[in-house]
Length: 128
Picture (cartoon, rainbow, N blue to C red):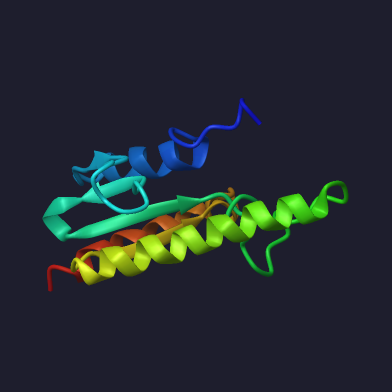
């Protein structure tokens, strides 16, 4: 598990490159904000979390499969992650931030174009 990255993952980098190419400017992993968000767009008062389907327990996703060994330990870990996510989202919303969650499975080649286009629409909707 020491090799598992919490930041600068492939899905995260794909979203960052896409946003930067379209003129969005952002900060990364702001430690002062609850949940240490992956991408913070201050101009839009928007935060983007990029969640791995396994680590954040994406319901009804083929990439979220509970391991057959140490099942109880893994379920505890994943449920803790989910609880921490919901606490961070609640705290950020209370501070007036708009939250967007992008799941790893939505960044696979079959869905990535649609997902990223939707992401831009959601970010820009804040300014209207």
